[in-house]
Length: 303
Image (cartoon, rainbow, N blue to C red; front, side, top):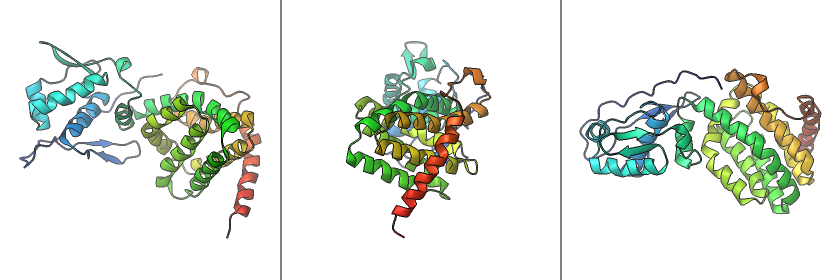
């Protein structure tokens, strides 16, 4: 994957005198121009969040040294004891290591616990969110089609109803882009749950925060969300019919759409990408049938 220049996160402004000890507020620009503001329940969580975002955002450089304990505590406006406790959490997540005399150093990214919920959320709002969103959607291409296959074989009647309700909710998001990420995650999580594989379902819960950002990015272009809706309905109907092979194929085509979008943004060579069996023509076969299914669903709904 070609390297891209990282945007250096904005350094926190000087903290004023506060009645209660709090780390300095920090904002991280999201991929759609939004702003994520640290708003954690307690001081400990806020320090962990602040340092975690800085590390994932390359503020200290890859495998770089963090400032000394007195410097970092002063920079954050917190006590050294509070800072030490937060550093312990970052050590447990594989982000840093602490050595006598040499100080606290960022560990290689390969050592980070990338499926940790907090580490994933920090990636989602880092300057490298595009790279990590691509990695996520590539994982989805590997996992979700087979999960859909299992869901079509194993889903109970109640789970089929839940998948249908999630699909209907997603269809109701047309013209409401802010509602799309959450509704899309609910839809895909309902399929993972219906696979009756506990590890697949847990994996879905872990990557939800990063998936939300990925969905937000890949549905920004006008019409992109609407183009994918028929495939969501087609997948729902395949699972309802217990058509495992059909569900697997449709799921692959569905995830192929954001995958190709992100690959184009990153200017990746087609030869390096995962290829869908049969190529694009399968999408053309599925979409008309899916649109027919959507019309059928519309007729069933009360006016």
